[in-house]
Image 1 (cartoon, rainbow, N blue to C red):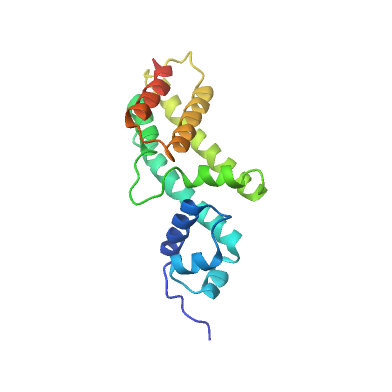
Image 2 (cartoon, rainbow, N blue to C red):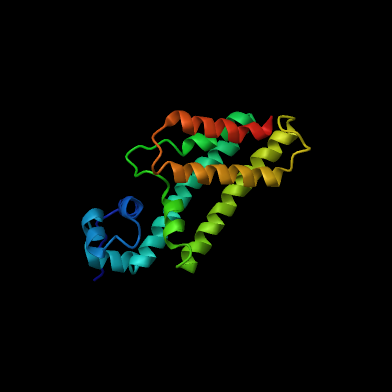
Length: 190
């Protein structure tokens, strides 16, 4: 008879995300995952597969959570400048999370070494760029952003600013410096 799972998959994945985010993939052992997730090693293997498969599920969950925030921001169809400002500022809001960005950290750690991780992160970044593009085009249609500016290139610009902020958030403590970077990134819309 099959044993009933005694845990919520999203909850244990959140625990795995936190540990991978804090330590990185390579430094995280299966024993640490067992202890941090609060489930048996066998349950990890039965539910997710090996450590790499668990890591990919953690990346997917993190990406989905981040994407929902961005989709909600774009769906509001509010003014483009404050929406983009909010998009950039979301990076800095951390509640009980490690510094930086799990996706960026993972890309830096494994992107060159692991084609599956690199491909996943590239697709996630492409989705974010597409959301930015939609937001900018909407701003152009409403007359908030000059149509002389290339919406696709602006989406690249804001994606680059966002990734830079997500990288800086790992070590930056000067909030004024971060605010200045956000203001200057937005200046391209003026």
